[in-house]
Length: 141
Image (cartoon, rainbow, N blue to C red; front, side):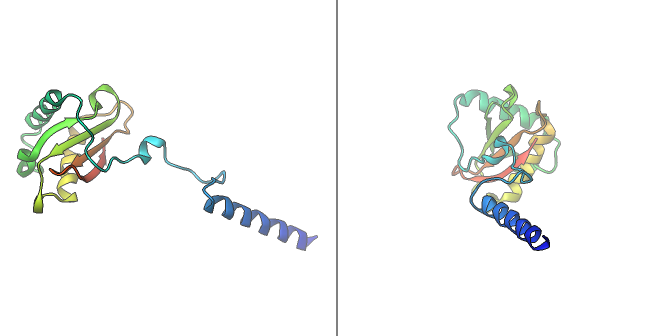
């Protein structure tokens, strides 16, 4: 009887391990929500460049006294993604290049953006891109 219980327990462990490694989720494995999994690695096309530049100017006007991004303010060119319409996605286009195109500078910009705006759901994502369109940093707002 004891041997049967041990064999059964071992079978359950092996089956659960096989399910997890095969890509199937065991009931106790939680996955992030789909909107948290998708990361855009290159700057998506801008549907309304004028509105994006206007959003960037508004952001810079409101954050003018923010010492953390003062040195980076000249690099922020556009903010797109429909974040103000409830999509909870924002894309910040910059002209950061060379030594200035770092994840740390991307983080500073993303954090300033997060303190400037709020998401309806509280789960918005802001992605900051370098001049060449490559992703520097992804943060939350």
